Image (cartoon, rainbow, N blue to C red; front, side, top):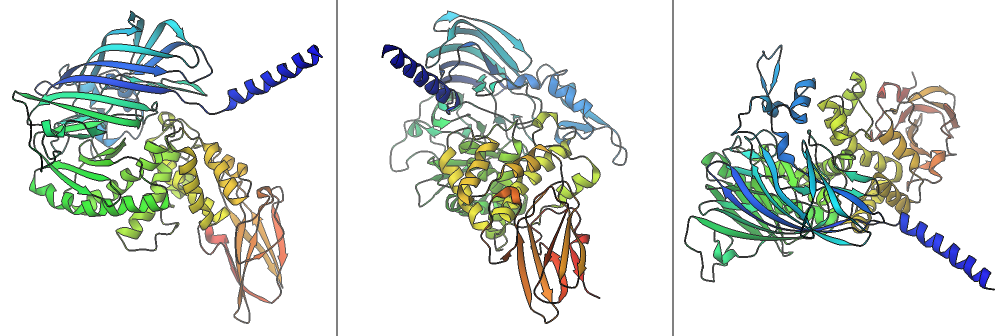
Length: 611
């Protein structure tokens, strides 16, 4: 009896262990930082108390931090990559050749000591005991005095100093618009550890992967500077600058500097920007969210930055309705950075001399609050998920709100993808964002082909199902780190269709879609799969009598079919290169996918017309 009981308990333990090893977990951070800014030399000194919770099933012998600003130094990995890649980001280089024969020179390579960026760790302790650490470019390796066990919390106390570089990419001093401080990636940031292990990637070009947690940040800065960024200002009556309750008396302290205190719950980054010449406008939405707009007090910018405000509200309402409710109570659109870049509760947007020059960027960056800041995919490994899904939803929002279109998925933006196929530069979407051979391949893959993942899904499982997918994906994975398999599984659960083949073909290979009408004889139609990627097929047949009929041919691997009013034919197994079916009447024309939503790379063979 005892032996049986012991055996059953052992089996139970094994099952529990297996479940624990495969169940979802994520690490947690609680930052408390205090930083003093010298606006004259763009340097700052700070303290950081970081409570780190190891929710993994693993014992951690080391931890890693990112020191992003070390990338902005001559001979850094970022500098080396700029000098090696054939199509460098034009913002980061000087063209010392001609327009016809460009010769690019890295701007980082030319930085002087007082222009570079850096983050220096001056001291670091683990639970009040000094630890050893090594600086490896933009990564800090910390050898722990005592391993961190599963479920354990430890406290790291750090003194650090930094220098904000000349503005080259995302963060920096005195950007093109004259914004003084664009403070992104400004602090030593704990690297993420997840089911794949540590993500202590060097900062070379691409984006980020952060640990979920809470930030308590105090900033001491010249009193003339206005700050906008992540989080909620805790002491608005001591600050003013447009944040105060105008019905209450201000209590602004005397002195050269003001002390700004921010709190940001349940985020994975903290970003801010500051300038002595910001206008600060506020728009309060009906759902309780406050929109902040901070932009240069310059007549060439004020008109567009005023106009964009109501449209930002409309865009947020669109995303709330079509994805899920924005979870925080403030969002700030801040002039700064270059182009546009998303951060927790805020975005930095460059330019704004005209409404059209920033409208699309604001819509795109705002959408990132859903597809990255709430659904926090690993941007380095799965850039197609955050950039692609953001492009998908922001394109439809822009079409609906800015152009008064139908706001439906379409093939309007497929051109870049077709170019990448024709030119041969396409790479699998599984490529790490920094390791694409060209910037063009990264951009087209992440933004265009990533967006097309969802348009192809519309074609495969139907538009209404995709709408349900986005909402369920948001509800199931908000405040987590979803992976490609997660969006695939949500789509399978919503549609009842198997989609492993689609994730594999579209994301993990460079296979292309090409179907053709091979032969039409009497009432018999033969279709051919020319490309390597299989798909279900929609076909419209027009008969001699002027009537027409729509057909749907499911792909056998789907083990299901999308909702449709079309005549559903027998499924087509991918291993068969051709498929023949018979119509009820004499045929005049045949067309594969009249919607053109399917990403067929050669539509010249998609139509037949009887002579």
